[in-house]
Amino acid sequence: MQVTLKILRFDPAKDQRPHWQTYQVEAEPTDRVLDLLHKVKWEQDGTLAFRRSCGHGICGSDAMLINGRNRLACKTLVKDLGKVITVEPIRGLPVEKDLIVDMEPFFAAYRAVKPFLINEEPPPQRERLQSPEERERFDHGTKCILCASCTTSCPVFWVNGTYLGPAAIVQAHRFIFDSRDRGKRERFKALGSGSGVWRCRTAYNCTEACPREIPVTQLIEEVKREILFDRF
Image (cartoon, rainbow, N blue to C red; front, side, top):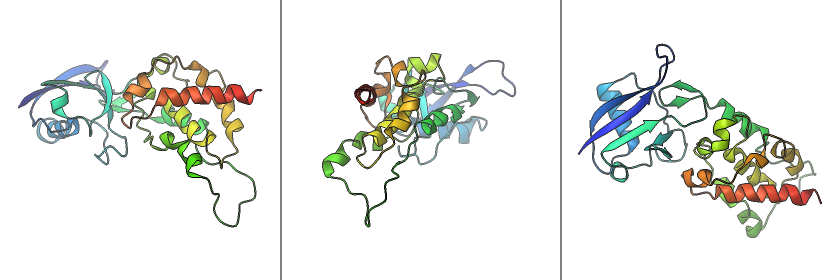
């Protein structure tokens, strides 16, 4: 089948503003959008720039706005999109070139919530144990691949780039509810600030965008309640 691929392109070295460029690509229904981008770059236009790494939905590096919705190019099939496919960079982050964005603001928010185990108690002779039920409590957060699909689909993040965003809050949730961790109040400093979790307007865009089906909005609400309960 013949597919029309419309890509929003921008090269800061020569463009004043982004513009659409159209390519005709021969594709199978089971081809992925990533396959089409490869065909364009390798066979038609080597100047096209985009990020990708594992190609199997594990690294999250090829998150893009595809037909108006945040998705991973390596997991999105042509048969689910139709014969006209639009591809844009994810929103809310500075565009470096074409589909590549500067991820530093996203990872700055990630670092702000201290995404690592904090426990200064003397370690036991063996590992710090926890029950299957305690492990299950933060299971959703362990599935996050930091693709930024949730954060860059959030309208609050679009208008306020200082908002920590859903992905950082999910990472905080993963450790706040870990029975071995003792650092939740350190994380609450960032989460309870003016750029923290109270900025969330419960729009559910983040949950709909997550390629790993993490209930992002639910986890954000759980963090809000934990901060409130901690005050009493």
